[in-house]
Amino acid sequence: MADLDDFTAWFEQNNGFIDKEYMGFTVFSPEEGGRGAVALKDIPEGHTLFTIPRTLTLSTRTSELPHAFGLEAWKSANLHQGWAGLILCMMWEEAKGQASKWGPYLASLPSRFDTPVFWSDEDLTLLEGTTVVGKLGREDAERTYNEIIVPALQSHPELFSAEAAEKYYTLTQYHLMGSRILSRSFDVERWEGEGDDEENEAANTSRDMDVDEPEPQGEAAPASAEDAVEEEEEEDPSDVAMVPVADLLNARFECENAKLFYEEKVLKMISTKPIKAGEQIWNTYGDLPNSELLRRYGHVDLLPLPNGKKGNPGDVVELPANIVAAVVTEKLGTSQATAEERIDWWLEEGGDDVYVLDNDLEIPPTLASFAKLIGLSPEDWKKAKGKGKPPKAIMDQSMVEILREVLRRRLQQYPTSEVEDEKALEGELPLNARHATVVRLGEKRILSGILSNLKDVTKRKRDEEERSGQKGKKSRK
Image 1 (tube, rainbow, N blue to C red):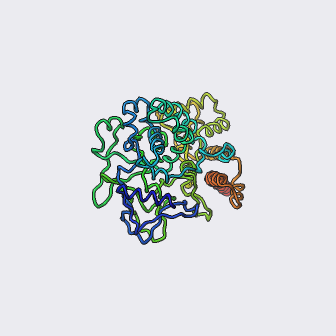
Image 2 (cartoon, rainbow, N blue to C red; image 1 turned 180 degrees about the vertical axis):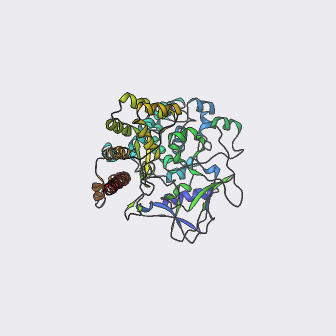
Image 3 (tube, rainbow, N blue to C red; image 1 turned 120 degrees about the horizontal axis):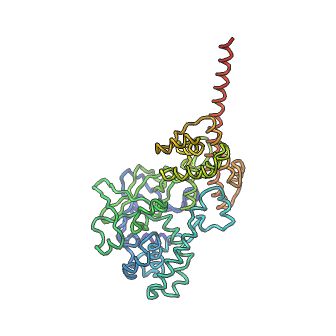
């Protein structure tokens, strides 16, 4: 790991600290995350594994590019919104090579990702039925590149030479830097008093974090969680930062044993539980489902499950409301116009248009309530609308049958069956195909598990009706 040796030497020369007595770096198996950090000896809880000066994090606040570009011009070019500015900073710093403060760090970052944004169209068809492809944002990224990055490059030829543009400022490099941010960045909020007034105004200052010694209080979160639309709207883009060394730690579902914490001038990675010598040091990605792990990081988790199989306990499957509405209108004869009116009201009242099902194998009450709403009689619909309250989620026989059909249709959106996926994983598959199959299988298990539970509900109700009927016959004798 020669590049890593150069990187750690650079890190320590710039006032970074790594406790090499307790922690080292190694290459684990692909199932264990590949390159990561290992405990060299037993590590107690609360031990500082490494320290990163805030000045060594790479963001739009620490790179010189926004100042060289001109802060007002930076804002006018819309480089202060989203990740475009940070991506351009990373491109610029990499183009400078060893002249950049972060040269050795950028050289140590991966130049290849297994995330679906880099998959071929043929491989992307393997994800049919999942929501991964729809969340890649490839078209939006290319639009941002063409509408924001390219004009910025053209406006400052003294900063971005035509020669460098052919190598360092291409659309391919834009996707690469975006993937580095998505998979490895953290939210590093501004500390009180950090930066001058001009910077504060340009960067849209965020709230402060507080730390009391000796116990760290301000926890730095991986910034990858920010790419959900709602969180993007709330987040200060200048908080998103690349954090050397911290981004070397892998993560796995509920295995976290270290966290990154804020202090005034440094960030510290601190063990949150005892770690045995030889064990991997894990950070956290937030216990994400395999669909998100694949989309953001290019890997999936396969852990032992209570049923004896392997998968990700955090898996979820998304169920669009339009499938529910379609089934209800067909089953109950509700007109399309009536359904659309009720859907609009539901959304205006803050209802969901996508329902998330998880491994508890339960129907969310809001899902049953929505289905009930679409099928209300005109009189009951008028009452519900007048009260401003959706109907209660009562799981009667009619509702059970509707939801079973909804789940069956959702399962039909996948190109393969659950049995076919399980059989495929027993053999050899190309990496992308294996990852896609694991994602599909985890989602199908949730859908089929809920279907099975609903079948049990139907059976219990029928058994109760039969027993009730038999009692009625006996009482008449």
